[in-house]
Image 1: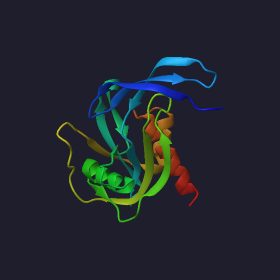
Image 2: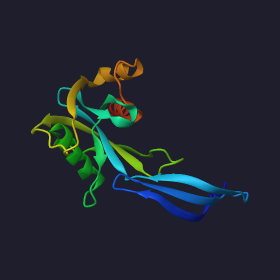
Image 3: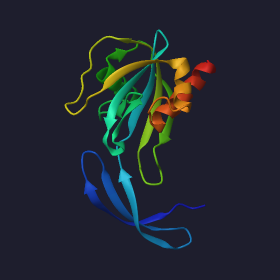
Length: 182
């Protein structure tokens, strides 16, 4: 198999949130797709945060595209001057007030949706977290913090007892697997 060749690109939209790019691509067999749309977004980090009491720290927030509230693991973009780990630690502290003296464990790095998006997510596990401060949210953020028993959270996911998204479910089962194999 061979990669596609980008013959031309133009931006249809640019914003702080992300860009929409239209590419003209030549396929390996010579066919041309005139309008292949790519969503350019920043990479982000997320983490499964577990307290000393084996509680999982989750954030609840409104997600406008889905028009509902969701329980999620803390996540966000890293700043340009941060490592991925530093970005995660900052996001967790800002969103939840929790910190840990234990170094985050990288569970994996994944493309979000490589068919139409160019960004990645790095997923971490942070253990023995403790609440040390209040939230420091952006002016448009309204985030509730909830604790759930880590060992039982998977049942809540698989039985649809909690409303969450794919990244939280995936990260939870990766963390569970990591802890089983320690």
